[in-house]
Structures are given as C-alpha cells and as structure tokens.
Image 1 (spheres, rainbow, N blue to C red):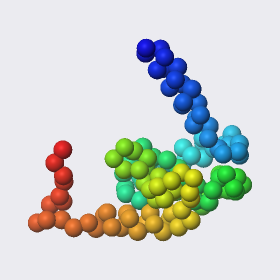
Image 2: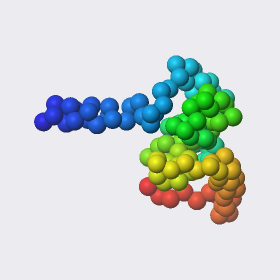
Image 3: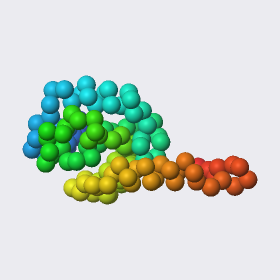
Length: 127
C-alpha cells in the first residue's frame, strides 16, 4: 500500500515541479533567486522568515525577459499558516496575477507591524 501511495505521489508531484507555464527557466534563475532571498530575508507582506518564495511582479509566463530582473521580484511566504504568495501574489488563485502586489504587500506589512495590543501585550490565540 505504501509503495502504491509513493508511486502516486511521485507522479502527482512531477506535474508541478517545473511549472513554467510554457516558458523555460534561465539557468541563472537559481542563483538570482538565492541572492534575492539573501537580500530580502522576510516576506514583504507579513514579515515571516520561513517558507519564502520569490514571486515575479509581472508574469514570467508572459514576460520571460523580466525573469532575472530584481525590480520584477518580491518575496512572499507560502506556508500553511500564512500564504501571502497565493493570497497577495495571486489573489487566492494561481491562475491570476496581482498587478499591485508591491503596494498590497507594503499595505499589509504596515497593518501587521502596527496592529493593536491590549495593555501593551499582543493578543495570541490559544493553541
């Protein structure tokens, strides 16, 4: 049973591994991505420092010439608790693209950093 599940998982995973939607990635992309994450180590929408994705502001699928341009990149998280990449980068749908992602990310980061506290203590929901 485990082998069957693992085989299914490998086939399913292969559908999404190199999803470039028709445009081939540059060989320089891994280096550009790693360097961008070094200089931008947190999500630009919520400030988290885990599960980071480098998102293209203008679609890589339609404008592949901007793939390596740092002006076209923004860091967004893609974790289980918070998925700014999907919510802000793609407006809750990976078939969509948010043309104002940079403005929206800055807006939400400011709101999160300035959220209210109760008696000087930030409220944390019990787990």
